[in-house]
Amino acid sequence: MRETRRIVGVLKARPTIEGAGVHLKRAFGYREAPQFDPFLLLDDFHSDDPADYLAGFPWHPHRGIETITYVLHGDIEHGDSMGNSGIIGAGDVQWMTAGSGIIHQEMPKGEKTPSPGGGRPMWGFQLWANLPASHKMMDPRYRDVKASQIPRVALEGGGSAGVICGEVGGVQGPVQDIVTDPEYLDVSLPGGSQFVHPMRRGHSAFAYMVDGAGYFSPDRGSALIAAESVVVFGDGDQVSAGAGEVPMRFLLVSGKPLKEPVAWGGPIVMNTQEELRLAFDEYNRGTFVKHRI
Image (cartoon, rainbow, N blue to C red; front, side, top):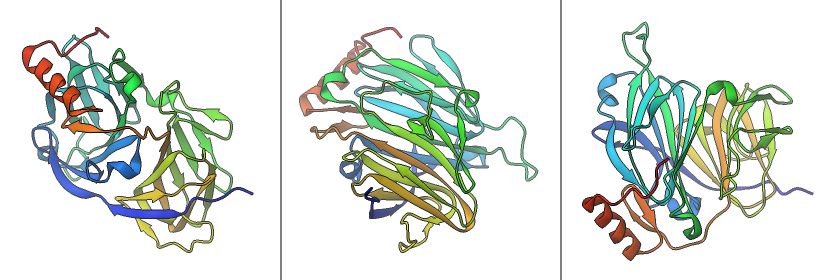
């Protein structure tokens, strides 16, 4: 018999400012990261006011991690120090493996056409995933996934799941061959419906409520979880989610924990303080980037 994962914690996303002045909500970060291993951080940037996001995230380095950007509304222009550039549009995902090091920028632009109220909606998420010591210095790479490449699977009882990484109903997501064996789903459920999803035992797992409200227990015995909340699950073979009276939308993420030491300094995450100091020293000396993408 499959064991349904229980809720072991619920965190409310908190306002913060990052980059050159981007207003966002942080679902979890440095303090909470140990319970999300291999994931380090999840940010929700959501605003109709360009003043909240246009300053963006100018040139900065990354090493030792993967940054996963998922856009719901608006555009993000990106570029790196080696001349790569492009746009992450609505529904798109950019899975960037920084590996040994990359210097890049991400500049949110919002939707091209203003909303009826005069604003320019911008809504996206950035998830950071740690890399194991054996892969910290791997060659950097991008995986740019367009919305049309992300399958949307109809669920029994209504609703659907966008499969970025992992599998639902025998349908595989486009992002594969990631060292931490992650799963990343975007699930929408109509009011009163339920979704049960199998999950590898031993993997860390969480859900982030995007919209609406719902439950994460098969008997609906848990408290109703509202938007901008992250649910941390204990171990088990499956996750159960159910919408209340209103529809719910949530991100469901899981991955294999690394169980390794973490030395974290801003956008660089290594295993030791010595490795961290070396990375910043190389950045200051202009020898940070090791490989061309």
